[in-house]
Image (cartoon, rainbow, N blue to C red; front, side, top):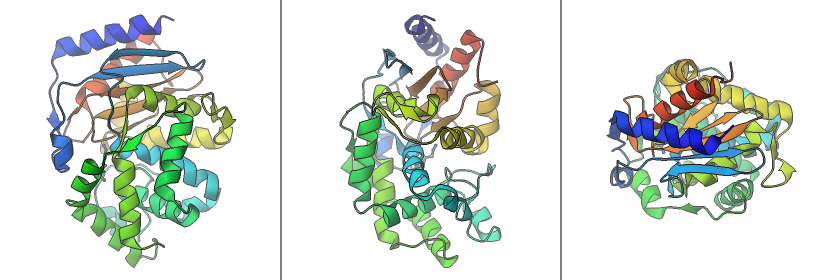
Length: 304
Ligand code: DON
Protein backbone atom coordinates (compact mmCIF):
# COMPACT_ATOMS: atom_id res chain seq x y z
CA UNK A 1 0.00 0.00 0.00
CA UNK A 2 1.39 3.39 -1.03
CA UNK A 3 0.33 5.37 2.05
CA UNK A 4 2.13 8.53 0.92
CA UNK A 5 0.19 8.66 -2.33
CA UNK A 6 -3.03 7.84 -0.49
CA UNK A 7 -2.84 10.65 2.05
CA UNK A 8 -1.73 13.18 -0.57
CA UNK A 9 -4.79 12.27 -2.60
CA UNK A 10 -7.02 12.58 0.48
CA UNK A 11 -5.41 15.91 1.37
CA UNK A 12 -6.06 17.33 -2.13
CA UNK A 13 -9.64 16.12 -2.31
CA UNK A 14 -10.53 17.55 1.10
CA UNK A 15 -8.94 20.89 0.20
CA UNK A 16 -10.95 21.04 -3.02
CA UNK A 17 -14.23 20.68 -1.10
CA UNK A 18 -13.57 23.90 0.81
CA UNK A 19 -15.44 22.65 3.90
CA UNK A 20 -16.00 25.21 6.62
CA UNK A 21 -16.76 25.13 10.34
CA UNK A 22 -16.07 27.34 13.30
CA UNK A 23 -12.88 27.52 15.38
CA UNK A 24 -13.56 26.85 19.09
CA UNK A 25 -13.95 30.25 20.73
CA UNK A 26 -14.62 29.35 24.37
CA UNK A 27 -10.84 29.02 24.81
CA UNK A 28 -9.80 32.44 23.42
CA UNK A 29 -6.19 31.43 22.78
CA UNK A 30 -7.36 28.64 20.44
CA UNK A 31 -9.63 31.04 18.56
CA UNK A 32 -6.44 32.81 17.34
CA UNK A 33 -5.16 29.79 15.40
CA UNK A 34 -5.05 30.07 11.59
CA UNK A 35 -8.27 28.27 10.50
CA UNK A 36 -6.69 27.18 7.20
CA UNK A 37 -4.12 24.88 8.76
CA UNK A 38 -4.52 21.28 7.63
CA UNK A 39 -2.19 18.35 8.11
CA UNK A 40 -2.25 14.55 7.99
CA UNK A 41 0.35 12.09 9.31
CA UNK A 42 0.11 8.31 9.08
CA UNK A 43 2.55 6.04 10.90
CA UNK A 44 2.76 2.36 10.01
CA UNK A 45 3.75 -0.35 12.44
CA UNK A 46 7.37 -0.28 11.25
CA UNK A 47 7.55 3.38 12.28
CA UNK A 48 7.50 4.79 8.74
CA UNK A 49 5.95 8.26 8.66
CA UNK A 50 3.86 9.55 5.75
CA UNK A 51 2.69 13.16 5.83
CA UNK A 52 0.82 15.87 3.94
CA UNK A 53 0.22 19.59 4.54
CA UNK A 54 0.95 21.08 7.97
CA UNK A 55 1.68 17.71 9.53
CA UNK A 56 4.86 18.81 11.30
CA UNK A 57 3.29 21.84 12.96
CA UNK A 58 2.28 21.68 16.62
CA UNK A 59 -1.30 22.34 17.70
CA UNK A 60 -3.29 22.08 20.91
CA UNK A 61 -4.31 18.44 21.39
CA UNK A 62 -7.05 19.27 23.94
CA UNK A 63 -9.31 16.25 24.57
CA UNK A 64 -7.03 13.86 22.69
CA UNK A 65 -4.87 13.99 25.84
CA UNK A 66 -7.69 12.11 27.61
CA UNK A 67 -6.46 8.95 25.85
CA UNK A 68 -2.94 9.45 27.23
CA UNK A 69 -4.12 10.05 30.81
CA UNK A 70 -6.56 7.13 30.60
CA UNK A 71 -3.69 4.88 29.47
CA UNK A 72 -1.52 5.85 32.46
CA UNK A 73 -4.37 5.50 34.94
CA UNK A 74 -5.68 2.26 33.43
CA UNK A 75 -2.27 0.69 33.86
CA UNK A 76 -2.13 1.85 37.47
CA UNK A 77 -5.68 1.04 38.64
CA UNK A 78 -6.87 -1.59 36.13
CA UNK A 79 -10.48 -2.74 36.72
CA UNK A 80 -10.88 -0.64 39.90
CA UNK A 81 -11.27 2.33 37.63
CA UNK A 82 -14.68 1.25 36.39
CA UNK A 83 -16.36 1.79 39.74
CA UNK A 84 -15.67 5.52 39.31
CA UNK A 85 -16.44 5.95 35.62
CA UNK A 86 -18.69 4.02 33.23
CA UNK A 87 -18.00 2.79 29.72
CA UNK A 88 -21.21 3.86 27.94
CA UNK A 89 -21.61 6.46 25.21
CA UNK A 90 -23.30 9.55 26.63
CA UNK A 91 -25.17 10.88 23.60
CA UNK A 92 -24.62 14.30 25.16
CA UNK A 93 -22.16 17.12 24.42
CA UNK A 94 -18.65 16.70 25.87
CA UNK A 95 -19.13 19.31 28.57
CA UNK A 96 -22.65 18.36 29.66
CA UNK A 97 -23.45 18.19 33.38
CA UNK A 98 -27.04 16.84 33.21
CA UNK A 99 -26.44 13.07 33.35
CA UNK A 100 -24.03 13.44 36.23
CA UNK A 101 -26.84 14.38 38.60
CA UNK A 102 -29.28 11.58 37.86
CA UNK A 103 -26.49 9.02 37.50
CA UNK A 104 -25.21 9.96 40.95
CA UNK A 105 -21.79 11.35 40.13
CA UNK A 106 -20.55 8.46 37.97
CA UNK A 107 -19.70 9.89 34.54
CA UNK A 108 -20.86 7.93 31.50
CA UNK A 109 -17.34 7.44 30.12
CA UNK A 110 -13.73 8.65 30.51
CA UNK A 111 -13.81 10.93 27.44
CA UNK A 112 -16.60 13.37 28.31
CA UNK A 113 -15.18 16.15 30.48
CA UNK A 114 -16.76 14.80 33.70
CA UNK A 115 -15.16 11.38 33.12
CA UNK A 116 -11.83 12.86 32.10
CA UNK A 117 -11.77 14.89 35.33
CA UNK A 118 -12.21 11.66 37.32
CA UNK A 119 -9.31 10.15 35.35
CA UNK A 120 -7.12 13.19 36.00
CA UNK A 121 -8.07 13.01 39.70
CA UNK A 122 -6.91 9.38 39.68
CA UNK A 123 -3.71 10.46 37.91
CA UNK A 124 -3.07 12.96 40.72
CA UNK A 125 -3.59 10.21 43.33
CA UNK A 126 -1.14 7.85 41.67
CA UNK A 127 1.62 10.11 40.35
CA UNK A 128 3.61 12.53 42.46
CA UNK A 129 4.34 14.93 39.59
CA UNK A 130 1.41 14.26 37.27
CA UNK A 131 2.12 16.96 34.68
CA UNK A 132 5.81 16.13 34.34
CA UNK A 133 5.13 12.39 34.32
CA UNK A 134 2.40 12.75 31.72
CA UNK A 135 4.61 14.74 29.32
CA UNK A 136 7.46 12.32 29.96
CA UNK A 137 5.15 9.43 29.07
CA UNK A 138 3.92 11.12 25.89
CA UNK A 139 7.49 11.96 24.86
CA UNK A 140 8.45 8.34 25.28
CA UNK A 141 5.59 6.82 23.27
CA UNK A 142 5.81 9.55 20.62
CA UNK A 143 9.38 8.48 19.83
CA UNK A 144 11.62 10.52 22.06
CA UNK A 145 10.12 13.84 21.15
CA UNK A 146 9.76 16.96 23.30
CA UNK A 147 6.14 18.04 23.65
CA UNK A 148 5.40 21.27 25.48
CA UNK A 149 2.47 22.62 27.40
CA UNK A 150 1.44 25.94 25.88
CA UNK A 151 1.06 28.21 28.95
CA UNK A 152 -1.08 30.75 27.09
CA UNK A 153 -3.60 28.07 26.09
CA UNK A 154 -3.61 26.64 29.60
CA UNK A 155 -4.20 30.02 31.25
CA UNK A 156 -6.75 30.98 28.64
CA UNK A 157 -8.82 27.91 29.47
CA UNK A 158 -8.24 28.31 33.20
CA UNK A 159 -9.61 31.86 33.02
CA UNK A 160 -12.74 30.55 31.29
CA UNK A 161 -12.98 27.26 33.14
CA UNK A 162 -16.31 27.73 34.89
CA UNK A 163 -17.92 24.65 33.32
CA UNK A 164 -15.09 22.25 34.20
CA UNK A 165 -14.85 23.75 37.68
CA UNK A 166 -18.58 23.16 38.15
CA UNK A 167 -18.18 19.54 36.98
CA UNK A 168 -15.35 18.98 39.46
CA UNK A 169 -17.38 20.36 42.39
CA UNK A 170 -20.34 18.27 41.33
CA UNK A 171 -18.17 15.14 41.27
CA UNK A 172 -16.82 16.06 44.70
CA UNK A 173 -20.36 16.39 46.08
CA UNK A 174 -20.88 12.74 45.07
CA UNK A 175 -17.55 11.79 46.67
CA UNK A 176 -16.11 10.84 43.32
CA UNK A 177 -13.16 13.22 43.59
CA UNK A 178 -10.26 12.69 45.99
CA UNK A 179 -7.78 15.50 45.45
CA UNK A 180 -8.04 19.29 45.85
CA UNK A 181 -10.12 20.64 42.98
CA UNK A 182 -7.72 23.44 42.02
CA UNK A 183 -4.83 20.99 41.85
CA UNK A 184 -6.66 18.57 39.55
CA UNK A 185 -7.96 21.37 37.33
CA UNK A 186 -4.41 22.68 36.95
CA UNK A 187 -3.35 19.24 35.66
CA UNK A 188 -6.45 18.93 33.45
CA UNK A 189 -5.97 22.35 31.80
CA UNK A 190 -2.27 21.56 31.35
CA UNK A 191 -2.91 18.21 29.66
CA UNK A 192 -5.40 19.87 27.30
CA UNK A 193 -2.81 22.56 26.47
CA UNK A 194 -0.17 20.05 25.33
CA UNK A 195 1.02 20.97 21.84
CA UNK A 196 1.91 18.18 19.43
CA UNK A 197 2.32 17.74 15.68
CA UNK A 198 0.31 15.19 13.68
CA UNK A 199 3.50 13.08 13.48
CA UNK A 200 4.02 13.05 17.25
CA UNK A 201 0.38 12.36 17.87
CA UNK A 202 0.15 9.49 15.40
CA UNK A 203 3.29 7.97 16.91
CA UNK A 204 1.88 8.31 20.43
CA UNK A 205 -1.20 6.32 19.33
CA UNK A 206 0.85 3.63 17.60
CA UNK A 207 0.71 1.21 20.57
CA UNK A 208 -3.09 1.15 20.27
CA UNK A 209 -2.75 -0.15 16.71
CA UNK A 210 -0.17 -2.67 17.86
CA UNK A 211 -1.79 -4.71 20.66
CA UNK A 212 -0.45 -2.37 23.34
CA UNK A 213 3.23 -2.53 22.31
CA UNK A 214 4.94 0.74 21.37
CA UNK A 215 7.67 0.35 18.77
CA UNK A 216 8.87 3.84 19.75
CA UNK A 217 9.14 3.21 23.50
CA UNK A 218 10.17 -0.39 22.76
CA UNK A 219 7.96 -1.73 25.51
CA UNK A 220 4.47 -3.04 26.23
CA UNK A 221 2.46 0.03 27.30
CA UNK A 222 -0.78 -1.80 28.08
CA UNK A 223 -1.78 -5.44 27.95
CA UNK A 224 -3.26 -6.55 24.65
CA UNK A 225 -6.76 -6.79 26.13
CA UNK A 226 -6.58 -3.39 27.84
CA UNK A 227 -5.38 -1.78 24.60
CA UNK A 228 -8.42 -3.31 22.89
CA UNK A 229 -10.63 -1.80 25.61
CA UNK A 230 -9.27 1.69 25.00
CA UNK A 231 -10.00 1.21 21.30
CA UNK A 232 -13.55 0.09 22.15
CA UNK A 233 -14.01 3.22 24.26
CA UNK A 234 -12.68 5.44 21.48
CA UNK A 235 -15.03 3.85 18.97
CA UNK A 236 -18.11 4.22 21.18
CA UNK A 237 -17.32 7.46 23.04
CA UNK A 238 -14.39 9.22 21.30
CA UNK A 239 -16.58 11.74 19.47
CA UNK A 240 -19.22 12.35 22.16
CA UNK A 241 -22.67 12.79 20.63
CA UNK A 242 -21.15 12.22 17.20
CA UNK A 243 -19.58 8.83 18.00
CA UNK A 244 -22.20 6.94 15.97
CA UNK A 245 -21.69 9.21 12.97
CA UNK A 246 -17.90 8.75 13.11
CA UNK A 247 -18.23 4.96 13.33
CA UNK A 248 -20.71 5.07 10.43
CA UNK A 249 -18.63 7.32 8.17
CA UNK A 250 -15.07 6.32 9.13
CA UNK A 251 -15.24 3.06 11.08
CA UNK A 252 -12.07 3.48 13.17
CA UNK A 253 -11.49 3.99 16.90
CA UNK A 254 -10.47 7.61 17.34
CA UNK A 255 -10.42 10.67 19.58
CA UNK A 256 -11.05 14.30 18.76
CA UNK A 257 -10.09 17.57 20.43
CA UNK A 258 -11.45 21.11 20.13
CA UNK A 259 -8.05 22.21 18.81
CA UNK A 260 -9.19 20.49 15.59
CA UNK A 261 -7.12 17.33 15.92
CA UNK A 262 -8.31 13.77 15.46
CA UNK A 263 -6.16 10.73 16.20
CA UNK A 264 -7.31 7.28 15.09
CA UNK A 265 -6.00 3.75 14.69
CA UNK A 266 -6.45 0.93 12.24
CA UNK A 267 -5.54 -2.05 14.45
CA UNK A 268 -2.58 -4.08 13.15
CA UNK A 269 -1.95 -1.58 10.36
CA UNK A 270 -1.35 2.06 11.29
CA UNK A 271 -2.12 5.06 13.47
CA UNK A 272 -3.06 8.41 11.98
CA UNK A 273 -3.52 12.01 13.12
CA UNK A 274 -5.27 14.79 11.23
CA UNK A 275 -5.51 18.46 12.16
CA UNK A 276 -7.73 21.26 10.90
CA UNK A 277 -9.04 23.85 13.41
CA UNK A 278 -12.57 24.48 12.12
CA UNK A 279 -15.16 22.43 14.01
CA UNK A 280 -18.74 21.31 13.46
CA UNK A 281 -21.47 22.02 16.03
CA UNK A 282 -20.49 18.89 18.00
CA UNK A 283 -16.96 20.25 18.56
CA UNK A 284 -15.23 17.90 16.11
CA UNK A 285 -13.02 18.96 13.19
CA UNK A 286 -14.93 19.11 9.90
CA UNK A 287 -11.96 18.51 7.58
CA UNK A 288 -10.26 15.94 9.82
CA UNK A 289 -13.37 13.76 9.85
CA UNK A 290 -13.82 14.16 6.09
CA UNK A 291 -10.18 13.18 5.52
CA UNK A 292 -10.55 10.00 7.58
CA UNK A 293 -13.81 9.15 5.81
CA UNK A 294 -12.12 9.47 2.41
CA UNK A 295 -9.15 7.45 3.66
CA UNK A 296 -11.16 4.42 4.74
CA UNK A 297 -13.32 4.68 1.59
CA UNK A 298 -10.21 4.59 -0.58
CA UNK A 299 -8.64 1.80 1.45
CA UNK A 300 -11.89 -0.15 1.18
CA UNK A 301 -11.53 -1.34 4.74
CA UNK A 302 -12.12 -0.09 8.25
CA UNK A 303 -12.58 -1.82 11.58
CA UNK A 304 -15.64 -3.43 10.03
O1 DON B 1 -12.24 20.84 28.74
C1 DON B 1 -12.47 21.36 27.66
O2 DON B 1 -13.55 21.86 27.39
C2 DON B 1 -11.36 21.38 26.62
N1 DON B 1 -10.09 21.57 27.25
C3 DON B 1 -11.31 20.10 25.85
C4 DON B 1 -12.60 19.74 25.17
C5 DON B 1 -12.42 18.98 23.91
O3 DON B 1 -11.37 18.96 23.31
C6 DON B 1 -13.64 18.33 23.37
N2 DON B 1 -13.35 17.66 22.12
N3 DON B 1 -13.76 17.67 21.04
